[in-house]
Amino acid sequence: MQSFRLDDFLAGWIGGASSVVVGHPLDTVKTRLQAGQGYRNTLHCVLSIYRKETVSGFFKGMSFPLASITVYNSVVFGFFSNAQRLISKYRYGDGRHPCGLLDLTAASMLTGLVSVVLGAPVDLVKIRLQMQTQTLLAENLHLAGTVPSGSDVPLRSVGVPVQGGYRGPIHCISSILQAEGVQGLYRGAGAMVLRDVPGYTLYFIPYTIFCDLLRPDATSTPNPCAIWLAGGLAGSISWVTATPADVVKSRMQADARLHRKYKGIVHCIVHSYRTEGAQVFFRGASVNAIRGFPMSATMFLTYELSLQFFRSF
Image 1: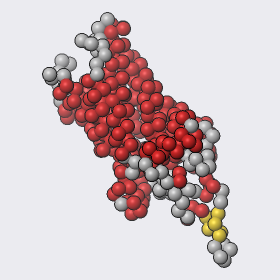
Image 2: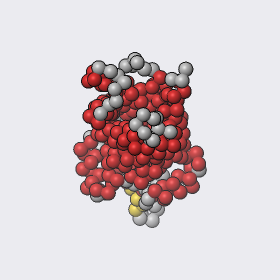
Image 3: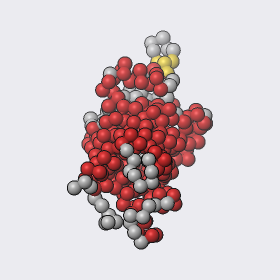
């Protein structure tokens, strides 16, 4: 058996496309909750998006993730599977040898690091597109308007498009490059490392454990229902535990270029805690738990079925 296989990458590409379509509406809700301050709760966020932007608002910014996250998941799943085989070959002399918990942890953490290289720009553009209909808050611009009577009107009551109105993913990328350079595409990458290294560990390991528990015996392969359930549970666990780092990442990436609020990861954490309390780091956790299940269930099921199809020839 070869230690390196390309079919893992192709199966990851197919799985990634299916998961984007399933999970993007809730991803939009999650991003708005984490990066904005105009929503009371998840239901209020959902209703606000629907009333102001109709159903299309939930799919805002999906074209870029659909094109890019497919590649991203292809790299993630392809790298993880091949890393397992390489580790097994190095440690046990056989790439087919089952990986132990330590082997899976190492492969997962390496996958988390690699994912940031592609994932940081993808997430940045996706979030900027999702957030551009939000209003700039008074604390972002330190301004207030006045009416003829002279009474102050808080800026939070005035809708101003964020980010200057990107026309699409390409325009967003070119605008960021012109204004901030290549490093601008990696804003929030440090927070993404804090999210993805432990996040992928709590993604792949629970999936493997649940699959083992749900299979009829040690020699059989999990059936599609078991794969779907194991993938969904792993996704919910991973996303809920990654929520605090995800909040920081989303806030830094959504930070308007017109006026930078956060100087870095530590400043974002401290500022968010002082202004909104510890609960801010769990904003969107319920959405992450709900969204993580169908997305990951679809991802793993499509990935495994695609692999079975490719290897049946």
